[in-house]
Amino acid sequence: MSQAPFETVIGLEVHLQLSTNTKIFCGCANVFGSAPNTNVCPVCLGLPGALPVLNHQALLSGIKVGLALNCEINSFIKFDRKNYYYPDSPKGYQISQFDFPVAKNGFVMIKTDKGPKRIGITRAHLEEDAGKLVHDNLSNCSLVDFNRTGTPLIEIVTEADMRSPLEAYDYLNTLKLTLEYLGVSDCDMEKGSLRCDANVSIRPWGQEKFGTKTELKNMNSFRAVKVALEYEVARHTQVIQSGGKIVQETLLWNDEKAMTIVMRSKEHAHDYRYFPDPDLVPFHVDYKVIDQVRAELPELPAAKLERFIKQYALSEYDAGVLVMDQSLTKFFESCVEHYSQPKKIANWFNGAVLFEMKERKLSLTELKLTPSHLVELVKAVEEGVVSNLAGKEVLTAMLDSGKTAGEIIKEKGLAQVSDDSALLAIVDEIIKQNPTVVEQIKQGKPAAAGFLVGQAMKQSGGKANPKKLNELITQRILNA
Amino acid sequence: MSISKKDVEYIAALSRIHVPEDKLEGVAKNLSDIVGYVEQLQQLNLKDVKPTSHAVPLSNALRLDVVKPSFSNAEALSIAPEAKDGCFKVPLVIE
Image 1 (cartoon, one colour):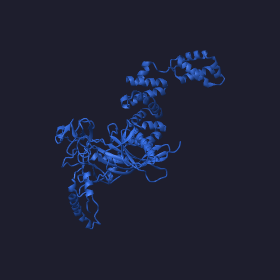
Image 2: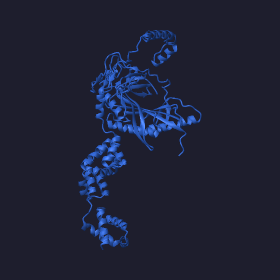
Image 3: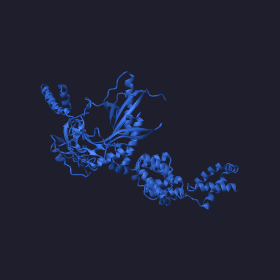
Image 4: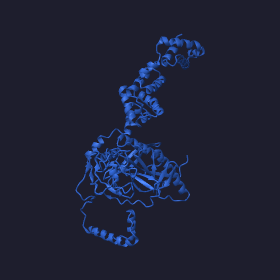
């Protein structure tokens, strides 16, 4: 593959809504989907004299995110006003953090085909979300709902460390998984709980100075971020190769047309005139608080992956599939508690159970499978009560009916026949019918027995224990 | 420091305030006077004074994460010049 003409440089900003009970600076409920303008108060509406007070839990969540992203937590933090006029912000400014954010200088490790790569985290700061605008072109007006105003956000800003849209995509997935483990947000992009803006530029290989960047907004999935970045890299390349210049501007991604569109309202360069918010006094974050939050951090995905590989002797693939979702890891570990055959359980889980989840388009919880029920099935297969194939049939029936493996095996008569006398009749019949194969086995080709086992299985209606069959066939022929 | 007419135009645009052409000169002079007054501080010897962002000797004012009652929709909209569908109605803004 020939090398791309330019090197791509990408930095990302992720806004994450924190799922606290209340908003960041007032006691209004922090919930999604209420009737418009029913979770608002003087602080949300920016009424004169209203005083914002920081939500303790929002601060703790901010510290938690900072620690999970390997950041330093600032011992002194403050809030600043970011001034801009837009109807989604009734005060005429957004309360954000300028020079003393809650966290700085962290990193996230991603996997690339050249090995692990470190993506630097410049900073993570707390701020308030803005209101929601609905544009009503017919009535020539816009409607403002201030319920979202004051929802706690943490903005996570990376260094310009990513070198391809794929790296950006991988970073986002890694970040999201970490944030999900922390339980500080539902991370639901469809609800807007997690939003991503991207800065992208290109430069000739070997050049240190960054090229002119464009900022991309309005991508509503990680896939859209990747596609938008690919589009923008191609556009930059084409502009520069045809002798043009990239203009620094903000672009909106249009998913339907699969292209970027210039934002019209941003003619002026940003000039937010940040200054310390006099309504919010500064904060000293005690190291004891930081230690406490650190002690309460859950086991994060990378550590869990490593532990699953070591402790349960799982393959990296199997461990990786489980770690992608916390509910899967909990289920798995609960199964292992019931039955200490982690590899067997992982095989069943990552194979048949995930297949059923996909087929039925259900989450693990919705599947209504319990760890003890799955273990009963895995045991039945391992102990030779049912064949592997029949086991899958049993699982399907379990999920359809809610019955246990034992009940279904009995009902459907799926138990393998391991009883010698019952099997010998079939074996003798098969030996009689296949003299040529028998001759081959006698001449020292034991692999040929597989054919006879298959025939015998068919004869038994799939109920015979294949291991037992193989044993009996070989014995019968060689001892004849 | 003196504030030029151009500065006034720029700041007025940022603040979404309309300053008529014939008032620019006067506003520029007024703002220059105010900034000049504050500039007297520069003459003080502040070598041993730490930078500060707040004048009040308070820190760590925090609130428990407990829900308090909000306005009803009618209360919230009682201050709206115009309302529609439970929302504040404003002139159309298109991005």
